[in-house]
Length: 455
Ligand code: URP
Ligand code: ZN
Ligand code: ZN
Image 1 (tube, rainbow, N blue to C red):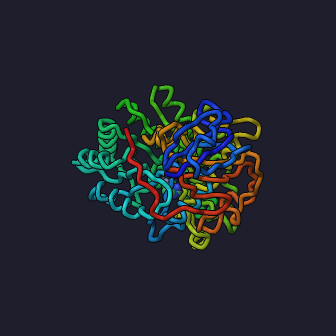
Image 2: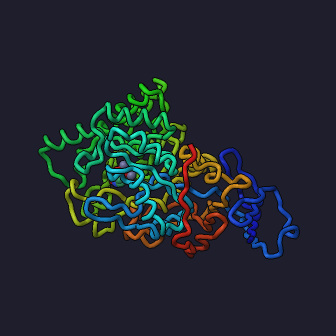
Image 3: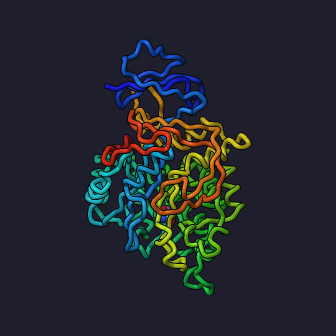
């Protein structure tokens, strides 16, 4: 069994940062200690000097859509491309989605797992539930047994067939999830507000109009709607990709009532505004919910710093420039942008500049927190002895500029073009195997493992 000694890096967990050595044996972390004497180790141990580098538990992107078949097309980053760009970003685990085929959740899950075999990094799945059926509880039981820990519900996209419209049906799904110990995550935009606005809309449908057509009020209303169901059932609810101050205020209201609301946001809602939707490149920045204002950015940034947001994930859903620019009508532009690779450097830059987040907080937001929330801890999200040796070596001082030429999405663009960031991933280990080192991708298609959530 091969051994790797990572020497003298700044080992970061959610509590501590200390100059320690880490010994990897095979796929697991074998020892973590202030100094491990090389002469006591097997003679073929590889020594990696990590002086000046942070040693982080592998980053987890808890919200991705790799190879998403939707709206008559497929996203740009399939499983190989997604794994590759993830490794460049220090991401060793993603949590992607299995769509509901509306016949059998278990078949839907099996189908998605089959598709995901080419993954080169590890992955878990959230299971979409897009239709109530009388025997849904049995179905939920079966997917739980098959390793699902979280359901994904939409409060919008009736037109695409994702909406469970009836409140009682939705409540039953929540109740069954609670009984089975499944987490419910929700994309929050009130479909009625969005469709009524659209019906009475006298304006155009340019990319910039997307922001007005899917307003923050719709997000806030949907949060209060699903939060109300969670309150009645005394259960937690996970809000995906929170985008607005109004939405955040609704979260605060629910929390005041005692509802356990777990909140995820994304770098694009933290750092980009709807001005990106203007001009000929506007379609590149269309996603749902839409980009909003600087005030919304600031509200979410503040919430990130003061602990009101538990997870930053990316909602990576990439289309090529050509796909995005096929339409200039916000109703038909394929929604979504790439983001997994930029996650850690963006959050590090925001956090470290001005001392807004410690490295330990960043680890909690991007690795340990999601691992615990989604039942992957401690194998993922920790540097504990005996756990998977998913390790990201990160140079916190390296300054660089994000551009399409310095990132690896098959979309051919990055939404953060020209952003100057501090901090770069130098090496990414997945279960003790180097999958990216010094700018070279070494991942192996098929090496990624499906992770069963423990709940
Ligand atoms: O526009 C987006 N976010 N596309 C991905 C699917 C979703 O709604 O999360
Ligand atoms: Zn969504
Ligand atoms: Zn999504």
